[in-house]
Amino acid sequence: MSKLNFLASSIRLTGFSVILLLGCALQASADTKELKLATQFSKETEIWANLERFAKEVQTASKNTLKISIVDASKIEDKELDKAVVRGQLAMASLPLEDYDELVPAIAIFEQPFMFFSSQLRMAATARNSLIRTPIEEAIRIATNERVLWWQPVGAAVFVGREATASKPSDITGKRVHVDRPTHAEFVKLCGGIPVVSSEIYNRELLETKKVDFLITALERVDSQKLWETAKSIVVTEHEVFENIVVMNEGIWQSLSDGHKSIVTEAAKIVEADIRRRQLEIDKTILKKAKSAGMSVGVISKSSVSEWKYCDAPMLETYLTKAGRLGRTVLDGYRKILISTTLKGG
Image (cartoon, rainbow, N blue to C red; front, side, top):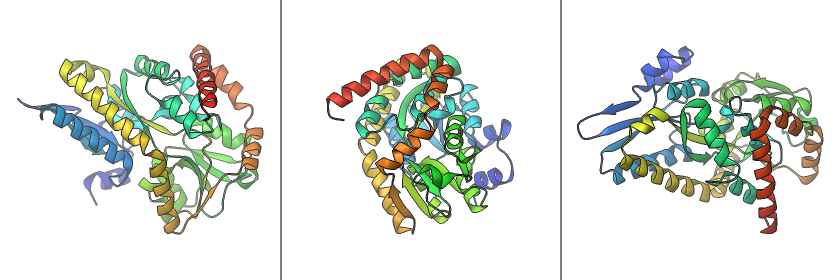
């Protein structure tokens, strides 16, 4: 067992311990500047591969004057990684977009059940410079001192069942459902379940200890945490959009030369386009892997979608109340994107 995994399983990683395990945010020598980039995803996943490609693009384009080192932070909670970036103790991290919805409530547009019901709509909403994404990124920068470099799709939204299958609201009635955000908890509660709220790094542990019956997650998490070893079913619901964002401390960004800024920006565009272009195939590969490992794999039916939408109906009003002016701006952007994709047949 590595030192990181040993320590992480023994203590709750906060503050100083995070710094010890991740190292310094920025290291410089006479010829090379090195930046640390942390992720909770394992080395076998597409998210890690995406970060590796970014590192390679940067190092090649900079002729080895700028190096990106990827750090395994699979045992460190999201909020601790975020704090490390905000404080400049860590240069960059790949973190769930939804982690920022308390500071920027408008982000929860992506957590509204079944609003993004087609792959075309999801692609348009999460595209660079979209009417939804642009104002959200600026709000994150202002609120946190973090610059969003690129977005990473982390797979279709799914219900994972420890023993049973969750395809309709009645399946979770009175059952414990692990979620990682208050918006997800509201969804579960409105539809009859009992939400259990904590970081997604605990998905596997909660299933192993039988503390939950179901969990809501993204397919990349199923792959990264090998949840087929602790659960029996997956139902693809696509009821929300799961994205990670790669953020960078704004002060460290400003310390880069104009040339290095340009290289990082271009590399981010390249790797985002690559993973987004392949996302549907990535999802299919993960589902095939889960099925071959013994999990039952299903897709939610249209009639079930109607049942879910009926019980979660109050959520949009709650969103607009919390998200304020930016929420209305984002919702207006959503409507325009919806009309555009509908006209194109999406």
